[in-house]
Image (tube, rainbow, N blue to C red; front, top):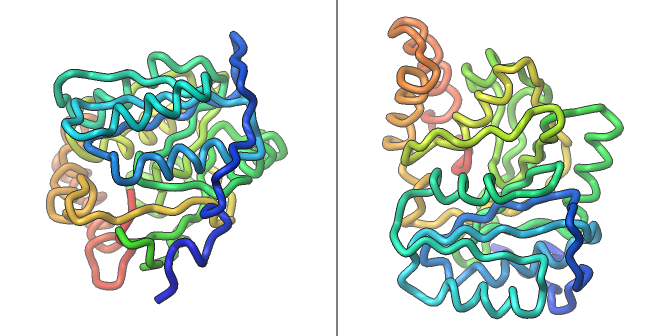
Length: 278
């Protein structure tokens, strides 16, 4: 099977393309939660620095790492002032970690990248152009799943290309957190519900519930790394948290939750489905 380095230009990231200065206003704020990510986070940060769109800030929100994650980020931060480290001394969970970055974000557009995932160098450029052309408030893209060794394990490209709140409740598309960008002038600056898992799905529902439509740019612009110990890897636990989103976050009745959960099961839990669905 082909290695990650052979299937994407992202492997050539030695020379960052970004500016070395920071202005008061930025166009895109990138939210990157981290926890014991020293092995992969450098590659993730370099994939941000390699973007051909340069007006961004990267907010790394560390969630009580006990390895060298913060030291790795600090080394990048010293060389590139667009990178900021928000470090918690204790582990509080990915929702709290992401929310710390969301609260610190200054950009009009919010994007997300986890500390072991990667972007193609034109990801931000392509997405911003698509959003401006369509007048879209919320955008996501196709992406590729890879394993810890960088080997391709799947292409995530199923579901509807344009979805409403009701569509997303019924899981009629896959929205990968690493591909999302939303416009705060149209969506506001909502925070993620502080649940341990599926907080990203709950945030997308919160945004779409306002009447926003999620539009998909049908290009593969990101790489999702499936790790054995990742929060999202356990499908049974993920399903339980989807149920909790229906009942506790969205406040749906038992019968309506059961209806949507049946759609979730058909979409995500049957064999040969995406390993990286949201």
